[in-house]
Length: 584
Image 1 (cartoon, rainbow, N blue to C red):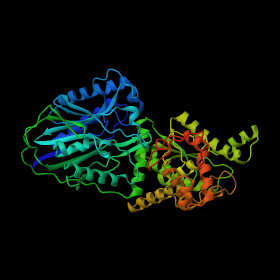
Image 2 (image 1 turned 135 degrees about the horizontal axis):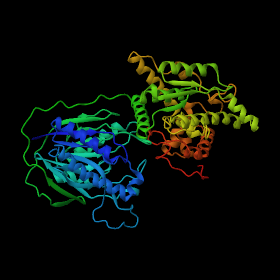
Image 3 (image 1 turned 180 degrees about the vertical axis):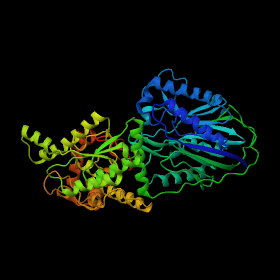
């Protein structure tokens, strides 16, 4: 057996920041070298950030990424790190593609992996399987590769693939067993969604057994628009047993000592062989195993519960959206209700109370407890707050234009939205919208009112989950001996928009427990009417909810982005025509 110390850099790159991302690689490569690593691996597309979307179709951006790879290799050598093999994901293009083939993306860009050593890229290889489902559009952006690179390092043959190549049968992963590699390294940009962590571990274990090789899965971390990457990098042995695992939702350098079968035979360096329709390319870095040494304990980060992971995802996504888009602070309306209370708490946890500004905007219909609950939240969390009654502004509109009924209710919401956007414009804050997924699904929001803003932290959170998250956050504070951040009355009182006397959400919506279950079946799994009825939902309610959801599509198109935490969010996952008469 041969020993190999592997470092997996679970880092948070920024899309388009080639210089900053290269700085991250150099910093983490130095840490890996100081830890005695023999190989350090970074996530998918770490140099460009991920996903780059239509930036992949700009030749200048592809050129800059390719140049960055070569410059990074030279920089690592110049900084004394040239002997440490560094594996990075980046944007490249298919070699020899002078012209773009019909039906392929402009410039033949590729989602690539490169190994940097002694001042140069030893190989560049491209992702084979291109996902084109859910949040992914990689057929639009990339052309596939068809090579499995295998590198002999300290007597160990190691193969490298990119993300989706692990998830799909066939392709490079299927060729690993034939290649004789004893370690398979997978570079990933795998977004978070609930319950995905268990699926990842099971997949890695199965692929390791199929390949007869240990498997190292390195994933990025951080928020990128609607997506949030949770890290959760891990290593399993050839039998699929978990050896090491990084924490979720934070950057980490996972250093793992492996004992692996020593490669047999001299190999045919630079030569290529075919296996399962994939070309196996072999590269030699070092033939001799390292001298035996005492291995480090393998770290396995503790797991948190499901609700805690969702909360961590929302906090990280909010922090990175604000940070990466260079906003100094955020502002939101505080109504005393559960939605604004949860969003304010997420913002304070993400940014600190000094960067969060709340505005209490009572109207003639606001209850005393709504104001006092909002004031209590401010007191508990120490965020910036001001009170601006909207009554005079609403009256000014009513004096100019006669309105009643729903138009009068929406007017109040629009005045509040206008006020927040004006303060944003004047003071430079990012406006956080506070609507949840249930309201967004049912169209229970006002365009240019409560939907106005730049980021929507709970856009993908059902109302029932809003309550669970609030209770979890309060319980976590109590566990740590701290004051629960959300007033209990905000959690327990019946939800209301308070746009008319005595109004409750249940006046126009079913109980949220019933509504969310139906919405999740309709939105989350695309069940049709008869399937929903067969699943046990009330037929009359099914008809009503389908109408509500379908009619609100035009509103959702104008809603701010928000972090995806479910299997199917409104945004990248679910794309339906606005003009649409299909109702079955």
